[in-house]
Amino acid sequence: MQDGKHVILYVEDDQDFLDSIQLVLEAEGYALVTANSAEEGLRKYKAEQPDLVIVDLMMEEVDAGTSLVKELRAIGNTVPVYMVSSVGDAMSMATDTSELGLAGVLQKPIDHAVLLALLKRKLG
Image 1 (cartoon, rainbow, N blue to C red):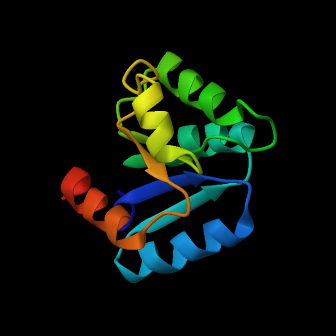
Image 2 (tube, one colour):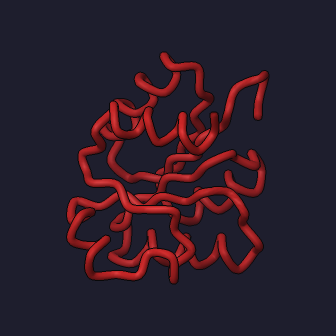
Image 3 (cartoon, rainbow, N blue to C red):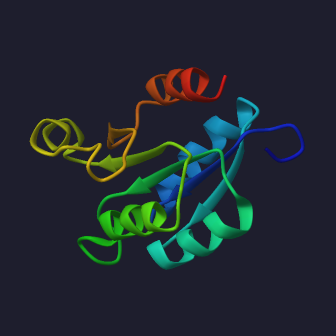
């Protein structure tokens, strides 16, 4: 938490998606930390200690999101991590998301109501 607000780290290379989520989450009282690459996401994860992480599957490299999730798991991450993908529902059915250490997969573009309900459920 930061100033009494839950901290969400969103790792995404598309600035439009970052801006959209930032408006929604900050209006609901969350603190949003953003990163434009997996490498930057890992640095900010370590520095900010977020309460929840959202990672885009495909960023600067095709498997950048998956690599970041594996890296977080390797360093002992205990907070929920959600993968965002334009093939979200198909990915959920075809992949054992728990094997990657994911709490779930979100369809891109993210439905704001679904995201807010998820955050309330996971963070209170």
